Length: 209
Image (cartoon, rainbow, N blue to C red; front, top):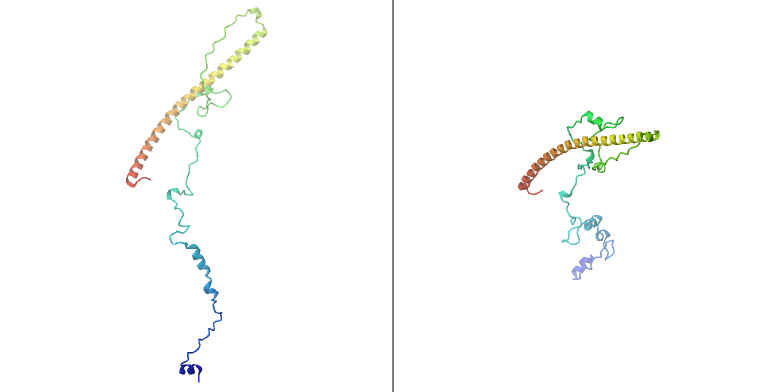
């Protein structure tokens, strides 16, 4: 007779079966206790509190107006001295000859600039009173001194006349250039007014930019 049948016939409950699991009681497999690497990564990316967004979501959004394209065309600074204004000015060659130093480059009223000191008005200088010298005192030394003074005076007059001619031609060129610039400014102001009107109509229909 089997043991289980004997116990059941006599009303004796059978003894509990022993757990034949290879793990000792109270211990569970390491796979069930330790989370996987994927679980850890998911927990790290998930917020601790449901009401607080993650740090990545707390970054302020970048407005489209703040983004500058990498290939934007920024105009480089322009040197005012390099700007060429189309001016229909052709000075008389004879006037240019009188304004140029013989044997040197021809005077160019477009490039020649005068300093403030050169453009200051010159005072009127009175000639010194002539002193009468008797003929018996006019020796070789006297005549050599006279020739030297006359040459110096002539060089001074020629230099002053040359500068006056250069200033006159330069002023004539600047008058023409100023007139051309005024016309260009008038055209630009007219074009700017048209652009402002177009912008005002756009903002009235679609809102400010």
